[in-house]
Length: 430
Image 1: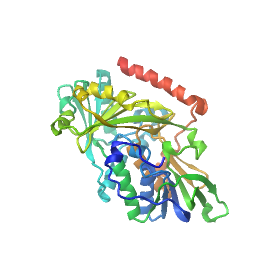
Image 2: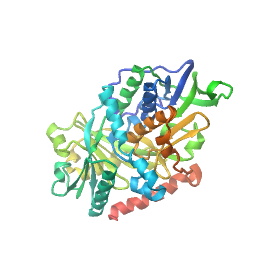
Image 3: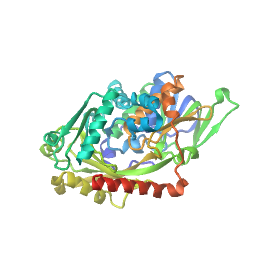
Image 4: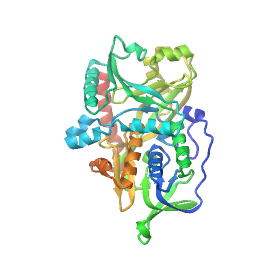
């Protein structure tokens, strides 16, 4: 658990700083558990507000999904605003809709203020295989425009090759509010930013227990690791798919799911430019979608698939290479240099879970595949709530969340059956 997976990101992150293991006992205003985007963005926002923050990471900064994902800044949530309105009412939809595009702005703000070099490039593209999917994207454009995203353009078959050079799609939707980054560089840059303003970061410091100390001032808690502890007034649980069973109430309401990525050898510059002339990141709109982009050093990075319950298929390359070659037949002649996987956290309603436990513990988890942007929004909302304004946090906190039916034993087969159904619909164009 201590080392990064053998990924393109780990090979190119140019990590220059290690953080110590927690030894001994510390005190802090806030102890954040988890060194991914959720924990880092929360910790930075709180430290900026004047709190003394300690962040504990079980492995290395960005070890989990934050250092393994596709690197795409995708707007909205895994369930879009129209679905939220239909199931939770207009007021909730309007409140969440106003926040649906904020996460990407949070990231760009951090990059600019702390001069984080993470290969950021603007622009994203949602690709449609069928006319029905194009109709859905047209509806999405109108929906998102209602909530302030005016950077959307529909693209038809006559001009799609100016965006992505393939015959696979009938069109799509450009979102210039999206973008893409080197995710591990972003996480490492955020950890450096946190330390630059006085926050403390500890790696290789897995939390083993959290003890409420009702006899202490301000109802503090003690967060224990193997070699030390942090006594804090407020605890933030931000481990997501890598939290394990530290808090069983949270693990019952979520399920780790694996997704996989491959990255090619360095491509000739002219070829890399021809594959995606727009330099946008791309994802299709199938239920079980593929996503891809060109890296800063001219590789094609291509991801997709879901393994329910977490983990990877026997061969990631054999699983993903046919998907890549279908979109770009020319890639059949190019080598795969890196193949890796990682887990994200799925919730039953596919909406993020933000909330409180006890008198002083906050949590955020379950972005269901939309974690890059949403985790940064969540960090901002957690900091607002801890600082005394919980109005926006509470919009998420009041959403109902349920345990997966059948418990841990049956949640995987139940979700697989649902995914099989939607995957079949994708194949049939329904």
